[in-house]
Every structure is written in structure tokens, then in C-alpha cells.
Length: 70
Image (cartoon, rainbow, N blue to C red; front, side, top):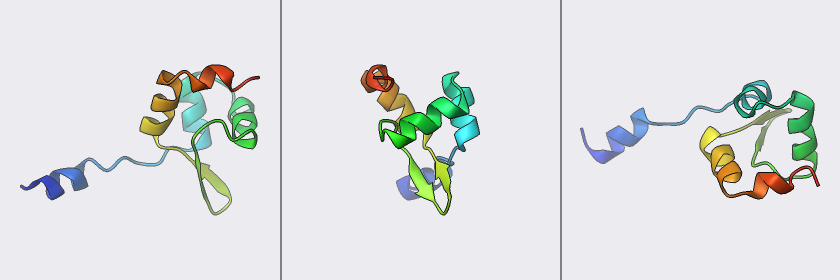
């Protein structure tokens, strides 16, 4: 197996708004507010919001999430 095959097996799945809210321990409304303020990293797929857990965790670890409610 070469490195490309390894990368294909490690593709990160998209998380829903509900899943990311549960992961962060906040309400879905809080996530929606952060989306509206464009503070949380997200991607829009059709009418749904999708998240990569690695991007959201990096956002939290960077300290940027501390300013999300301001």
C-alpha cells in the first residue's frame, strides 16, 4: 500500500450540525449563531451545513472559539 492508498483510507467524513453541536457540548442554536457570525469553520452543501471535525477542533485549539460569543 503506498501513501495515496493510506490517505484514501483516512478520508475524514463530514459532520452534521447536530453532530458538531454534540461534539462541542453546545446547542444547535449556538452553532447556527456562530455560522451566521462566520466564526466557526463550516461548508455549505446544498441547504445543509457540514463540518470537518479536524477544522473545528483546530479552531477551538487556536483560541478563536473564545471570541465566538462576542
